[in-house]
Amino acid sequence: MVENTKKSSGALILGAWLLVSVPLAWGVYFTVLNAMKLFAAVPSGH
Amino acid sequence: MALLSFLDRDKSVAHPGYSRWLVPPAALAIHLAIGQVYSFSVFKIPLTQLIGIAKPGPDDWTQSQVAWIFSLAIVMLGLSAALFGKWLETAGPRKAMFVSACCFGLGFFISYFGAISHQLWLLYFGYGIVGGVGLGLGYISPVSTLIKWFPDRPGLATGMAIMGFGGGAMIGSPLAIKLMAHFRTPTDVGVGKTFLVMGALYFCFMMLGVVIIRVPREDWKPEHWTAPAKPQALITTHDVDVNTATRTPQFWLLWIILCVNVTAGIGILEQASPMIQDLFKGMIGPVAAGGFVGLLSLFNMGGRFFWSTTSDYIGRKPTYFVFLALGGALYLFLPMTGGDHMNSVKLFVAVACVLLSMYGGGFATIPAYLRDLFGSHNVSAIHGRLLTAWSTAGVLGPVLVNNMREYQLAHGVDKAGAYQTVMHIMAGLLAVGFIANFLVRPVAEKYWLPESAVRVSSGSLH
Image (cartoon, rainbow over all chains, first blue to last red; front, side, top):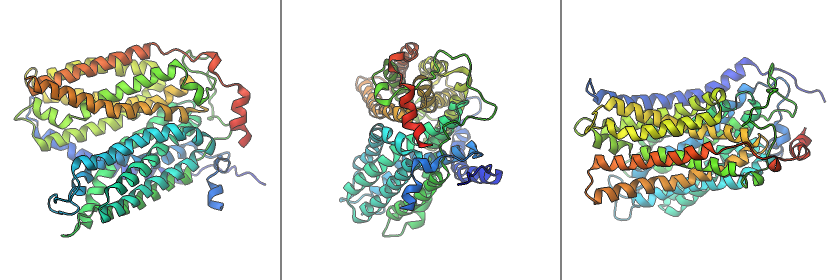
């Protein structure tokens, strides 16, 4: 049996990272939007 | 049968040239999914209105009945991680991730039937017990694999995965809210169908991790990396069996450290929204307080990556000294920022954010600390047993915080003053953790696994 020694392609690595990063970024976006409500409420100097 | 053999450990050994940078996304696919558990509270109100729809009906479940679903899931997380960790080490991460995906998805499907037939026990059994087993297995399954792929940066590797668990709630919450809004009709709150869709989505997402995950070959090491020639005092080059590890003082010292760190974090998380409103009366309302909780979750997630990566450079023990010493000082200082003293919202928020980053950091750095002390051979299983500290803190934290606060209020202490007492107790707990961390020493030679035993249980696979 010939052993597979091919290097993982950059596109595969990028694709895998995108698949997990996109949902995470979507979730972080909503959380940041929510967090902004705090800063909108704090008067300057406090 | 072909699918089942695909899950075998020897079928998941990486071929030469396989990039280790494919392994963190595999771990993240699992942790981002199971982290959904921390957003379960979005289902609380809809589940109490399954019959009444617009408001709770007389036959609807109460919030306290519904709250048990989450508690059961967290208890099962700790129990299954402790019970199945040893099996995971022999079965391999791919099979464990697959079982985790099946349990987590199945938990949602069973809950769907529970919601449409209004049978609470089906939600306890589905999301709580079956889903909880998926949580425990999923939480520990990528840990030892990541550590073996990143012997040069174990903190960074496990930090990335465990950061995903913090991020999972940020995805789960808006996803559930949008799905429930989509499925809502005048006769249905939409929670059942949301369970069905989320079960299918999370199962598919977790399968991504199952397909990508690989274990390194026995002789593999990162290019251009050699193990340090001079051994460091607290980083072992030997391995300890999981059953032996639980008999060492080091295991129980780390158990105490994790337990107090989590309990202290819960002290803030549990009362974040009412605390900021009570300390800054008239300045911070419920909407802004919700924003504060969101900000804390961002720091909880970011701290997991930041602190575990930092621990690769400064060492695990000093990192925990920072959590426990700086954390203790900040818990003492936090009430001083309130309206009765410094009256600084910004300072209060900044201190709370640092504290939550260290709460997350405590979770994310512990696998690397275990690797340093017990070796990488059984680290997932040992990590699984250590997670009972989390389950304990999950019960201890809220009980301590709520009872102490109620006691104070009942004895005439004002709301702001009651927070001060709770924060002082948290600082005291961290002081206990500081002493435990101080006592951590290298594991004695009598506990080490013989080299032959390590080779038999892992080397024979290749």
